[in-house]
Structure formats: structure tokens, C-alpha cells
Amino acid sequence: MPPEPPTRRAPARDAGGGSGVLRGRPLRIAVAVAAALTLVATGVAWRGIDSLRSSLATVGGLTLGDGRDGALDILLVGTDSRTDAHGNPLSQRELDALRAGEEVANNTDTIILIRVPLDGTSATAVSIPRDTYVEVPDIGMSKINAAFGATKETERLRLVEAGESDAAAEKAATQAGREALVESVADLTGITVDHYAEVGLLGFVLLTDAVGGVDVCLNNAVDEPLSGANFPAGEQTLDGADALSFVRQRHDLPRGDLDRIVRQQVFMASLVQKVLSAKTLSNPSKLNQLSAAVQRSVVLDSDWDILDLATRMQDLAGGAVQFSTIPVQDLNAMTDYGESVVQVDPEEVRSFVADLVDPDDDGSQSTTDPAPDVEAGTITVDVANAGGVAGLASRVAAALVGDGFVEGGVGNHTGRAVDESTVFAADPRSDQARAVAEALGGLATAADPSLDADTVRVVLTEDYAGPGADASVTSVASGSELVSAGAAPTSVPPGPPIDAGSTGPRCVN
Image 1 (cartoon, rainbow, N blue to C red):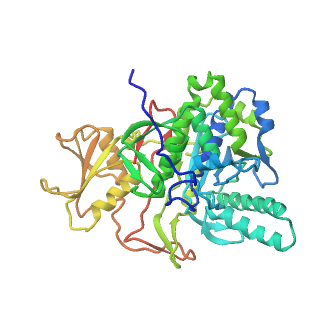
Image 2: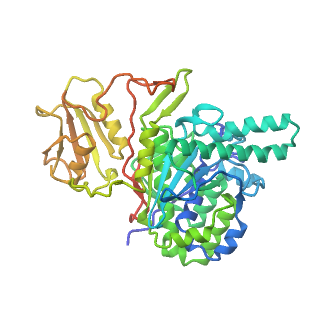
Image 3: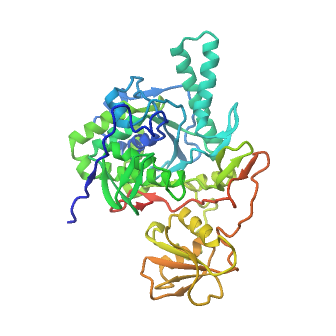
């Protein structure tokens, strides 16, 4: 058997809550939502589930649905709360371990919608980028991560000015913030949220440590001081403190926050896999730690019957838990007043979310060739420009990275003349060649024996019209007051789903 991967330990931080760079910045890691995800995906594994149910923090009064659209839709929200789920302040030791700094923000920077078909045999967790520009009730167009915080603060100030106590105003304002976020997600996705789960920072660390660390894999070594991410390339096991740095890095990543979302997804997939493993399920001590982590860090809506959910999902296997991200029209959009946002097409998002439960509304079977049976993350793609369109190779490479492929060399073509845009591979009929050719709009394929099996080379000519071809500046839908911040909108279609059933962690940027 291969040796166990080393456990990475974070470099020491001063007792003041992190490095000087991080002090005072909101810690946008609310990826602690992984705790709630694991509760959802593995509810049947909990021992003494009645005891767990009775000790969970709950919230009532939210406007929620009942699964009539064919799925149980669960909104998982990560917060940067400096209290536990029951409102108790975290200790200074816990705050120092979280490297959370001193500034407290109310934004919800991790927003995930889990769709569970009513037969309970699969689950898809769909990430919504925090900067997605949406309609927020009583506010107007705004980043979705501000729906909770802006609504909460507006309502809190109104109630305090009306004479309410600080405690009463805080409670009512928090409820208003949750309602605004639920409604914003429902408007964007076209579904009615059936259940709500909220997780604070502490739960992420507690849950990661409870399972003995989580395995991850990096394509390249990283050393990024803003997040504290300092890891070698390859597979490694991260404890809770290092895991926070891993999932919160967004600087020095090709797609910024979208690559951070991928980090979160592969981490959660690995976490679910770890929880579902026999080593966890057969270990009473680890199960007790997991239960304690959820009790301290998860808030659920009061109508959530955990026992019923566990019964529905008793046939769920790790590979049936998948992670994806909504399609993005422009990663680098900007408001007319200069705020960077993520532009999406609500109709496209709604169609994508609906297809997760009912991908073929008319019940017909597809007659196309089967999709290539290969993960994009296992294919390295070199892109070369053989035409006269400036920047084409870079834009196409970015589009491929957005689809989950691994970026190889990018530049001008210097080899033999190529008459049309072509995907070269050692075997032009391989799944690797087909996957890249399809991602770029159906390019021709050809043989290049010098390439290894997991590397393809794309040579682009002036006939290319696929993703990344359009370099024009465009405006977005009328009334949204957005313009592109770059030379062209950076479209990011959904990448291949990440699942929790693989034999090891998927390597990412």
C-alpha cells in the first residue's frame, strides 16, 4: 500500500488573530457549510440521531417549500459568525485558531444549494459565486452575498431607532436577513427552498479535525500570504486550521473566486468520502466528535426532520454526491459605478438547476454518442495560436480552465502549418481528444505521437468560433447597468461535476 500522505500543519500565528495582513479583514471562509453538507449526505450514519436532533440549534418562521418540484432543496449558508450556533461567543483560543481577525462582517460568502431528488439516491450541491449580481428584495440589484448582511443591518438599525433592545433587534434583523437570502436564491434559481442550514467558522475546523484531517491535492505548490496558504504540490492531508487557508485562497489563482469554489468543492467531496468511510463509521469516538461539531456549529430550520431525511437517503453512496457551480456569463463584469461583480443569466441558471432533477423533460432518450468517459481535471491542454487573432490562445485556455481542464503551455504555434483549428492527441479517437474537441465546439482531431495519453494540444486558426473566440466588449442585459471589466466577457460554463466517490482527491489549482 502507498504511504500515508503527510499531515500539513499551518505556520504559527501570533495570538492576535493572524498576520498583520489578515488582521481586521473579514474571514470569508464560511466553507464551514461542509458540516451541514456532511450532515445531509450521511444522516443515516449518525448514532443516537434523536439525541442529535434534540440538541441542534434551530430557527423558525422562514418561508420554505415542501419538495413539490420533485426534489428536496436545501440552502446551505456559510457565515463568519464569531459565536457558535447557540449564540455563545467563541473563546480567544478558538478565534486565534480560526485566524479570523477582529472585524466582523455579515456577508454570507459561501452559498450552496443542494438538490436531493425525492427518491434520495443522489444529491447535487450547486455553488453560487458570492459576487453573483442578483435582485435582492427591498434593495435592488446587489451581490448575492450582501443579501443577508445588508438586509440585516438595515432592519437592525430601524428596530433600534424604534426603541427595540439591542438583543431583540439583533434577533429580528438576523431573521430578516435569512429571509432575504432565501428569497434571492429562489428568484435566481427558480426553485423554492425547502430547508435552510447555516454554519459558522468553527464548524469547519471541528468537523475537519473530527475525521482526522481531509485529503487534498494541488497541481502546483502555493505560497500565498493573504490566505496563509503555503502547501507543496501533490496529495496531502490538512487539519482544520490549514484547511481554512486551503479553501479561502483566491489570489494567485487563474479564476480567482471560482477557483476557490473548486477548492471548496473538492474539499467537501473528500470530506464526505472520509465521513462515509468504514474507519469513521465504525469509530464511536469519531462519530461522537462529528456529532459534537454539528451540535455546536449548525443552525437548521425548525421544520427539518433529520430522521426523515436520513431514512430517505439511506441508499446514498459517496459517488452520488456531486458538486457543481452555476453557469457564469461574465466573471469580470462591473457595475456602472465601478464595483466588480459576476454576471449570470437567470434563465440559464434556472434551466441548469432544473436539469439536476429532471434532465429530460419529455422523457425521451438521447440518441447522440455517449459522452467521453474521462474527467476534465485529468487532461492537460496546450493551446497555440496559428492565426492572426491577438490573445486568442489565452482566452481559449481560460475557457478550458473554466471547464475544469488543466492548463498547459499557451502561446503562438511554431510547428507545421495547420489548415483548420484542430485538437492533436496521441490517439485522436481517445476520450481525452474528444472531450477537448467537444468543449471547444466540435473541433477536428488529429494524431501527434509526441504527446502523452493525458495531454492534448489545441492549434487555433482564424476559422475558430468556439468558446473564447469573441474579443468584443459587450454590455449585459438591459437594466442591469453592467459593463465588462476586461477586453471580453469571461464566460464560465459549468464544469464537470466533482463527486465524492473517487479513490483519491482530485488535483486542482
